[in-house]
Image (cartoon, rainbow, N blue to C red; front, side, top):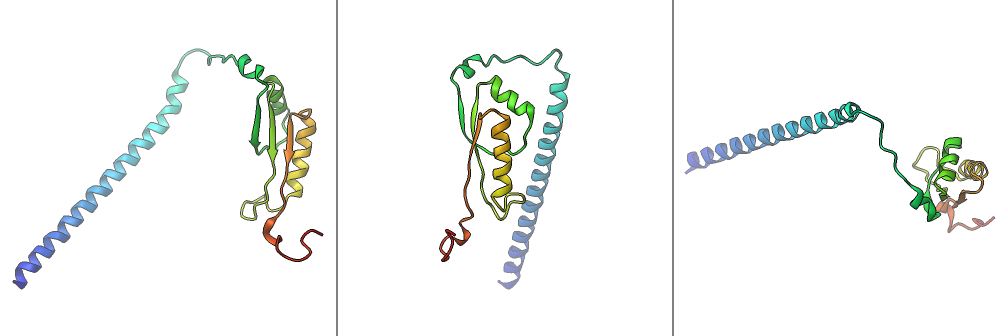
Length: 142
């Protein structure tokens, strides 16, 4: 009985090892195929002849759309021109996040958002928040 149990246990271990190797091989192959597809997509789009199609957005612009959630902190004339061309307005949101570099405090974001609001002629209005970490401490409101 002991010998048969040992043989069965060895066979199960071998079977598990075979499945593990098969799974690793399949995962590696899938990764390779996915990577090859992703890399070839860029070159495929470059091979298409002719200019890119022009999309008519007059219907979209006629709606006077408003994007109610944006995080735009780069003052760029091209961005302002895009908002104007699309007749688009955005609500630029400033958020304090101690774990996200550059967003640890509100003041720099608020300053950038104000600059963008002015450079876009008011098309990018903004709202802000405060750091809620110390909210329950006495003197927080001061």
